[in-house]
Length: 356
Ligand code: 1CP
Image (cartoon, rainbow, N blue to C red):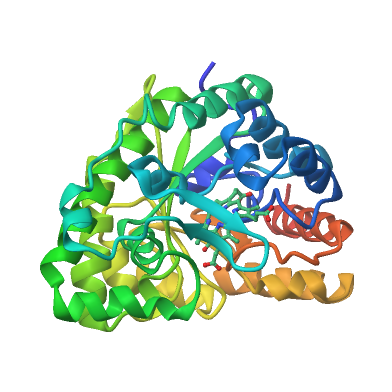
């Protein structure tokens, strides 16, 4: 069976009518859940957690056992792709993700090659298949990857932070080398996402978390052009069902019209844009996903209810084209019961407005 019993999320992405506004949250599995901490301890490390299909499946399902979420997202990380290219990913407690061999030399960039997802990323495909079996058709499963530019930020910098000054310098000094990395990344991401779709992912999301740090001209040339290339290379259907694509464009507010024209079905918004204004700009072309400020989850239940309603009211009364989400990931110190307040309010308030 390919169509989930609750398909409101897939319908909203395709701007079809839904019973209520579907909701899922970026980083819905993770450190704010005590059960995640326990599984991570049993796995030994974050990377071992990602590399074990059984653990990845367990963690993916944890938030679904607690909350009435309308989608599951594969538990993995965007940096598995450069790891499969041989850069040597590891996680440091204090600094977050790091690469042993960042791309600093011209020869290393020339040597970079597209990994075979069936081989070097087999564990991800096995996790996707295992999660689909465990979900047993309840809600759809989202697969994901980093955008070519966002991956390149980490690959050149060697880790997080520093506003990715190295790649932003390189694109002025040696744009040819940056284009070489981005071309390889685009091909790698196309093959990786299509393998996830073949393994059972029912929608796919591309995280362009750092494109927003570029100038307008550089954004088009180094981020959007490659996002567009990826979207064009994605499988559109699996077993007769459309597989919608979402592009999360953090900091993409100034360029929404251009991003909406990249061929994706939905645009993920950060919290800095008013979703109603975004809808007036691009809502005829794409569905919108977002965009509550994640820090609202740290506030009182009354504030969460008020802010959730404000996002729904801003989108406007309509039963098409909105997937509720945060504007970025669930904060680490979120009280787990606050997530229940948010998910229930999105369902109840949007359902009432539709007379359901
Ligand atoms: O347990 C831990 O300490 C690890 C924390 C953690 C988690 C829970 C990392 C390290 N990655 C993840 C999971 C993850 N990463 C998911 C899981 C699915 C979900 O529930 O949503 C997803 C979709 C990602 C994607 C990801 N990883 C992005 C894109 C989204 C975003 O946050 O903008 C990025 C930039 C990363 C890199 C990364 N991996 C981990 C961290 C802490 C980071 C960010 C580093 C930085 O600040 O630059």
